[in-house]
Length: 430
Image 1: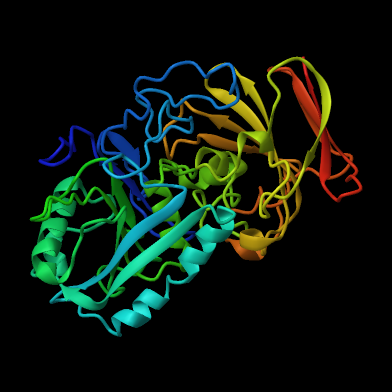
Image 2: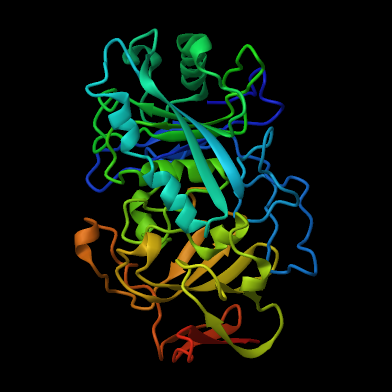
């Protein structure tokens, strides 16, 4: 598919960020938008996020810039891309979501709209409050009735990797079906909770998706539907499927492997909701929280010069304290050290300790922009959490353990906690 901006797209290319297959899901490879995917992320021509990117400023050498032409680059944009009429929704302050529920003539809702809405709220609001340390107030305004679409579900051609044309048809029909009873104006995100009996069960084909970057439809008052998350079926992730999808609306990429899903267990595993949102570790990486403005620069130790120094880290899951040690190499690569413990959104975490990972700003969403270093290669942990994605569950480094990267020239070792209980890590850079 070669997508072109539709009227109202304001010159930007639409990005479709979708869902990944679960263990045991029967997923067929499909070609869409010039990229090969296995029922997961499909980008409708890579976004030029930060297309005028400059080298990182001297004052923030660890805040690597977004790479031009990279789909949802892990880098920082040269100016905020969050807010009204921007590519992504606000990530601090209040984000306003309009939440609608739809069904179809051939798939009528089997229960009340209020019950379907209750599967996601207030849980999503609470998840974002905890993940952001209270810096993001997620305000969902629901229309608690089923909006009957004018055509059968089968008429839209919705399947894994469905394209822009199908999406625009649905959004235009939605505006007509909602009529004057729904005011779309003044919202940052539109959530559409589809009746769960529309389409195949989620364990056969995961269809949930987020579109951002272009307007699929425009209301009579000029409101663009340009940041839309659609949730299909009953996902085993529960409410976190919406937390994941809205993460795309905030500008976060997929961390799972879109073209070879099993490879996800060698990338970020279960350590971020943007990877495996049914995983035991349900929070976001410190890098993502820093990008979104939930962690301040003063909470990041930036190791850009040679030497050896010891740093104290407080768990990512709680507010305050040092949150990450970042070691940049060049303009597109950084190593990150952070402390993860079974707290907050990570209350079900399998192991605790210093999580080490590499961030690449020149790797597309769904292609592996984050790779976790495994402190215990060849072993896994908590196999009950997933059929085949457990090898990185025991990835964190604990006291006395360390790692050396001879190619890039840095090493770290985990030391005993300090008197305040913060974990200490000694980092050496050549």
